[in-house]
Image (cartoon, rainbow, N blue to C red; front, side, top):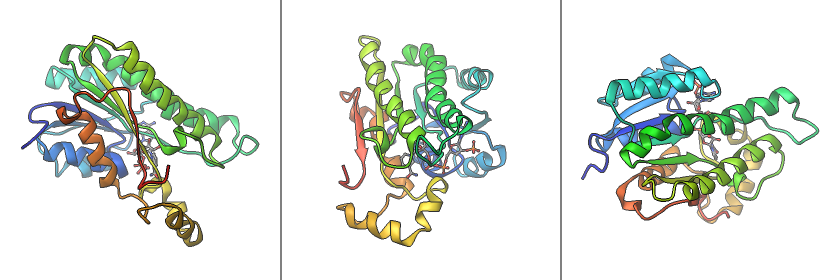
Length: 243
Ligand code: NDP
C-alpha cells in the first residue's frame, strides 16, 4: 500500500543524508516530492530516481527563497500536504569557541529556517489538513557537550514542535519531530572518521551502531502518514536506545 499516493511533500535538505533518504522514501510511496536544498546539481542527482519530483534550489535561511519554495510548490501542485523541515547545519564548539558568525549560521538555518518555512507553508497546510515533521536531534532534547549553538537551535526546534502542535488545535494540522542520534551522513563525517569516538559511541548505544539515514527516514514517513493520525506534538528519539 502506498501511503502518500498523490500527496505533495516538501523535503528540505533533500540533496544528501537524511533528507535524500526521506525524499526517496516518500517517492517510493507515491508522493509528489518537492526537494529543496541550495545545491541544484546535488538535488537533481537525488531527484533523478524519484518519479513526479521537482527540485527547488533555495536557502531556507533567506526569506525571499522561503516564499519562493511555497509559491513554486503550490504553483506546480496546488497544495502542500506534508512539510519535512530537515535542512540543517552544525558548527562545533563551546560558548567560548563559537564566534558570532558560527552562531548566526546555525540559528539562521536550523531554527529561523524552520520557523520561516513553516509560517509560509501554514495556510496551505491548514487547507489540506496536512502535517509537519521536523528533524530535530537528541541534542535538542537534553543537550550534548561541545555543540553549543547546535544545541540551542535544536532545543528551539524541539519546543517549537510542541508549541505549534498546541497552537494548531482544531486546525487539523499535526506537528511532530524526530530526534536522531549520530547518523551516517556528510554532516557527521568528521566524527565517523574518528575510530575512538565511534567505538565509545557504539559502547553507549544499546543497538551498538550509528543510524543509517534510512533508519531516520522511515520514522519521518511514519509520523507524516495516517498511521500516526493521533500522534501530535511529539519529539521522538530515534537513537537506538541511547536516551
Ligand atoms: P547532510 O549534511 O547530509 O544534509 C544536510 C542537508 O541540508 C543538505 O541537503 C544541505 O544541502 C541542506 N542544507 C544545509 N543548509 C541549508 C540551507 N541554508 N538551506 C537549504 N538547505 C540547506 O546532513 P544530515 O542529513 O545529517 O542532516 C539532516 C538533518 O538531520 C539536519 O537538520 C541535522 O541537524 C539533523 N540531524 C543529523 C544527525 C546526524 O548525526 N547526521 C543527528 C541528529 C540530527 P545544501 O548544502 O546543498 O544546501
